[in-house]
Length: 360
Image (cartoon, rainbow, N blue to C red; front, side, top):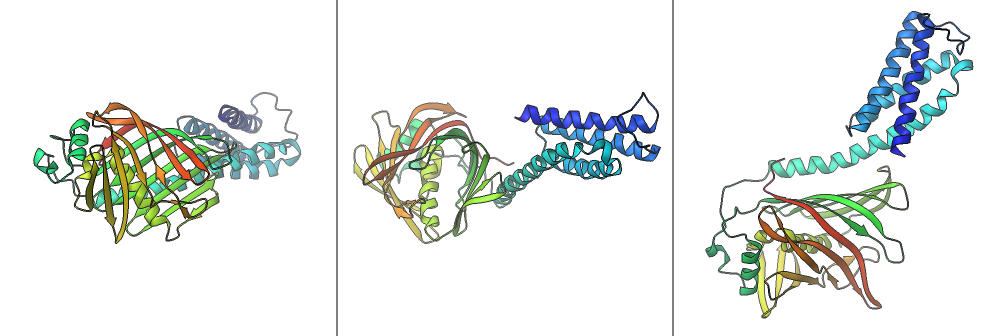
C-alpha cells in the first residue's frame, strides 16, 4: 500500500509539470483547453516539485513529509479550480494524498508526545558515574544476589535509565492476535515508564502510549493516531502500571533491583517475595529462579486487567537468555492473565535491543 501511495504522489506531481509546459509552450499540451500564464505555470512547476519532494521524504521516513504534502495539495487544488474543466479529476488524487498526510501528521504528533516526555525525563536525570560492587548486593536475598551475578551487573555502572526495543504479538480475550513493535524508556531515580507501541489491529495502523510518571498513569490508544479507542487514566491504572514498572526492573533492568524502595522476603531456595513502593503505592510480586540463577517467572496479584478493571493473578514467564550489551537477559517472554476460567496468554514478547544510561 505504501508503494502504491508513493506512486500516486509521484505521478500526481509529474502531471503538474504539464501546466508548466502549457504556460511556456513546451510541447503540444492539448490536455489544457484554457491558457495558463507564465507566473501560474511556475506555480504548477513548484507544486509538482513539492509533491515529489514529499514522496521522497516519505520514502526515507522523514517526519516533515505530511506538512509538504498538505501544502502541495492546497496549492494544487487552487490550480485545479482555475482549469476545472481540464483538471478536475486531479481532485481525486488530492483527496487521497490529503487523507494520508493528515494521518501521517497525526502519527508524528502522537509519537512526538512520547518523545517530549522522554526528553524531559532525560533532562532531570543525574548521570553520576557509579559502579556496582559486591558490597551493593549484600542486603539482597541470596537468590537475588545470584541472579544479579548471573546477569553480570557487578563491575558495571549503576543504571539511571533503560531503553528497550521489542516486538511481538498481543490480543484481547476473544480476539485475534496482532503484531506490534514498541520502544520504551524506564527511569529509576524518579520512577517513570514511557512506552510507545505501533501495531496494525484488523488492518489500520493503531498506536498506543502508556505513560507512568509522578503519581499518575495513563493508557491511550488511537486508531490512525487520530481516534481514541482506549483512554484509561483512572486510579486503578497507577498500581497496575507500578506492577508493570517493577516487572520491567526485574526482567531487563535487574541492576535497578538494588533499591531501598524494595522490601525482600525469601520464601525458599528458588523464590522470593518483593514489595515495591512508589508514591505511597505498594505492590508485591513473587520471583521464581531456576538452578542456573536465571529469573524464570514473575507473579503478582496486584495488577488490574484493564478490560474488566478487576485484579487477577498476572505472570510473565521468560526464557532464552542472551547477551545484551554485556548482560545476560531474557530474550523472550509471555504475559499471562490467570483468570478463574483458565490461563490466558495475552502477549508474546521478543527483545531486539536494550541500552542503559541513554542520554538521547
